[in-house]
Length: 357
Image (cartoon, rainbow, N blue to C red):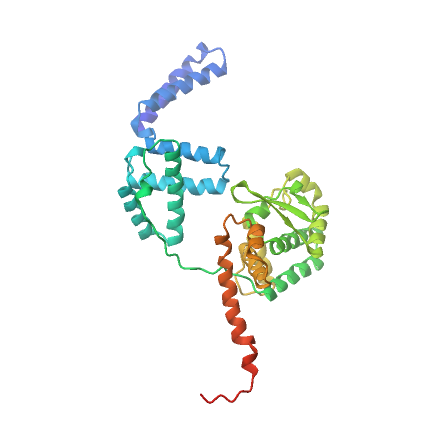
């Protein structure tokens, strides 16, 4: 590395002395680029392996052709880089089912089943791409049989009375705000929390809603979800519409300048972390002991609709789930709710029956 730095710095010095030979900055920069190119070509340690090259091509394909969002691409990059570094294979064609099986066993020792499942999904997509592009003759995953037994982790929801307490607290803070600055912030917070509960929107979707995608006159929002998929969702509560309308009027200049609907105090779009901190602040004021996250509003939205006998397919559409299997996790929550109801509310408990079994 030291030798390489010396070669680069020496070349730069020589080229800088010879700068007068070049008539334009463009020619000078081109000559510099040629020097770096020659140096890097001669350094095997600083060139990517065939496998790493193909992974980079795949990630570029995911960004340009599949239009995956930045967060998904980042997760893919982490998973695939970990794979290429762990197996120490340089050629794509050298990856066999045995190597994959060994790597999967390594993942199981290091991570929870859900994380392993995601990392393997990233790998499967990569090798499917290799097969599609005819980079490999046979997909090594075709010889592997993998089954996962993930423990069912029920989504955490917020009790209805807690949501009511939280909303009352936010409105109270707005009414009693000691300054116009705090009143404006409270108004925005009302709009954010009302929309989270009214639509079941993901926090990332809420923070990136563009101003032109909210039609308050027709009570409709266009939401851009995972994989750049768009969905329409209606806002049917007058209190929510009023909160959003008042917020838009108050923040009109910032919204027009930023382009996003929800903005912070310096005019940039609201961040995920800002919303989390906002909710934590109001939970502390209201003395709510339960730890509440923005995503729990989404879980509560889905679960409460299921408890009101709304068809799960409609809930799937509103949540933007690509598969109904994802939505079905909420049926487990409602089953546990049924158990609570039957244990505490069934009329048989109040009957005066002389049972002598």
